[in-house]
Amino acid sequence: MKSVVELDIKVRQARLAELFTDTKRNPEWMDDLERIEPISGDLGEPGSTYRLVPKRGKLTFVARVISRKVPTEARLILDAPSVSVFVTGRFLALSEETTRLVSEEIFSFKGIIGPLLGFFARGAIKGAHRRHMESFKRFAERQA
Image (cartoon, rainbow, N blue to C red; front, side):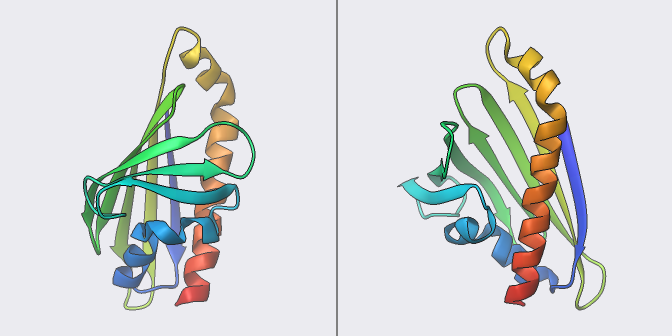
């Protein structure tokens, strides 16, 4: 399953990319995230891994940064027992002061019933993706 969210954000491209790829600041804009726990590597850099610990619930993801091409793109994989998510953030300069964020998430559900659960949860998943990106937009515009 794929979810794509596009938002125009009043922040310069390089600054927006820096904020998006600053892993330590994720809890500031991800309302459901309690903390980040580094596992290996230089946090936020390609090859690094870290745990995303939620405020509630049991679905803890381990993230691995695939690439970080600031100011244009960042990619990572989120892995949990029931699902893997390939995340791509693209930053397209629309003007000196505005950048379009294109956030793409591709979900791969695991196990025998995983794909079925994913099918029924797709509306909630897409809604959560949009909420996260709108929260990031508010955060980024406050930081600019």
